[in-house]
Image (cartoon, rainbow, N blue to C red):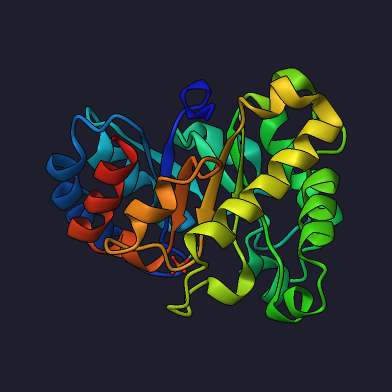
Length: 255
Ligand code: PEP
């Protein structure tokens, strides 16, 4: 077990939920519940909620992230948000390649790579999501798919930049469905990610990279998932909208 070599990170992904005033209220509720956590605590929120989130999280151990980033510095990209814009707001983390972006908004492995490079070049911590669909799993492609997505996402990323990379293994069939991967399936998927990183950067470096599991992780199942060798944290959707549930997960990751 080399868990001691890598920081545990629990990150909420609020998706398209919460207005700015709701953001302030929820973070104020969470702050005392996660204070003193022995893991990194991150909330990735909708762009319009970022100023309220940064303000509410001031002086606490909660870090704020965005849910996406564009790979161009500026220009005619209606509806997109650049690294400089996020930097100026005080964002520290960025989610990239979430399966909902891939499924509904045409993200490809190539754009995930470009967005990852843009985030890392700007000094953000990048939470890069990979994971197979149910169909891909049933066809027996899980390992190949996870390794392929991981390697393309990390193409041209330097070893130095890799220190700011977190990979979230999120089986698509487990996201927002209430169906969680078993503890062993999560560990296996995260292990495939680590293998891919080892093939690119070497086994010693791979041991230092934080790999989260995401997919219906909640207050009830977090303990078992987080106890697994390769599960260094979680990317949490639904349960990150409930202060009490989120804090239970943070506490489980702090043990
Ligand atoms: C997610 O959005 O990354 C996620 C894992 O969602 P949920 O926890 O709701 O399955």
